[in-house]
Amino acid sequence: MSFDRKIKIAPSILSADFANFGAEIRAIEAEGADWVHVDVMDGHFVPNLTFGPMAVKAFRPHVKTVMDVHLMIAPVDPYIDAYADAGADVLTAHIEAGPHIHRTLQAIRGAGMKAGVALNPGTPAEAVAHLLDLTDLICVMTVNPGFGGQKFIDMTAKIARLREMIGDRPVHIEIDGGVDPKTAPLVAQAGADVLVAGSAVFRGGSVDNPGVYGQNIREIRAAAEGVWA
Ligand SMILES: O=C(CO)[C@H](O)[C@H](O)COP(=O)(O)O
Ligand SMILES: [Fe+2]
View 1 (tube, rainbow, N blue to C red):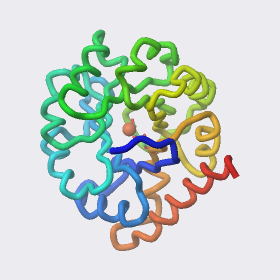
View 2 (cartoon, rainbow, N blue to C red):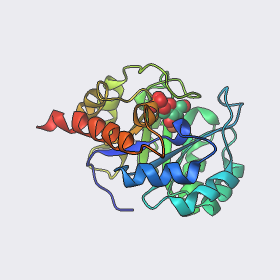
View 3 (cartoon, helix red, strand yellow):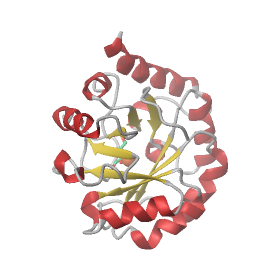
């Protein structure tokens, strides 16, 4: 997995057909997804429950791009090896999930994965000031985590501040929540390069009609890249 700051669209399979994950993943990749975003929720850190490492391991053979696993769980550390074994490329933990995020990021890298740190809307950019050399990705939540399809919360000032703090380090800024063709330009202009989108990618399509996924992905990408035109 090499580093670049081009816009990457990462559909969240939280909005996919839960009875058909393999086909859904193959469809979004065939239709232009750059990464596949996998939302793990524990019904404790967030008020919703999705799937765990066994399911994520079953997704792995279908993912040919980058498997980007967003943990919305607490605690994180006891499960790091299980997600490494499941084949996560990027493993992201929330800074709010426990007191020892520094140790968690070291452990994620130690297990051979790229380490991500996610920030809830109420957490300031400065919370990662001492983590910048331990992280490969900062995920800025633009909704309160737990559910797809929520309204975008404007975090552009936080994104711009993070881009400034990151300087020339090879750290991605990922945006998660409410990304669509209207909000994508705002976050791209502020400095984001990985755009997670669940409902805006899967809306209107299906594995039998995957062209809609492609159209949705192209619209988000064009809107985001348009800011540089
Ligand atoms: O982490 C998440 C929710 O906690 C999801 O990745 C996110 O909400 C994507 O869904 P949408 O694009 O529909 O907002
Ligand atoms: Fe997510």
